[in-house]
Structure formats: structure tokens, C-alpha cells
Length: 85
Image (cartoon, rainbow, N blue to C red):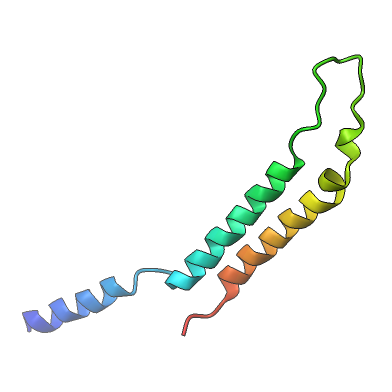
């Protein structure tokens, strides 16, 4: 009787993870892509407050970085919805 309860407890403990390993890998890739997007957005400031720096309106900060962040969010959402086999 005690052996059956022990085996059932082991089976329950094995199934504690919500996702498979591939889901976590895809999730980490998505988080890395989001971080890359925010890194691409950074910079473009000026040390002198009287001088305006036009670099804040560059293609990288206006188009590429937000698109990269949105792609990263898409990857993380995909990793959450991906079914385990």
C-alpha cells in the first residue's frame, strides 16, 4: 500500500514543470530579442543641453528597435502557446 502511494507521489513530482525545455529555450530567445531591441533604442543623447542631436530620429531608433521588440514579444507569446508533445 505504501509503495503505491510513493509511486504516485513520484509521478506527480515529475510533472511539476509547466513547459517543456524547448518552450523555455524559445522564451529565453524571445527575452534576448526584446533586450536587443531596447539596446538598439538607447543612446543618441547630447552632453550639452543647448545642442539638439538629430540621432534620436535615426532609422535604428524609430523603426528597427521597436520592430525588434515587437518580434521579441511575438516569440515569447509563441513559446507560451506552443504545445508540448
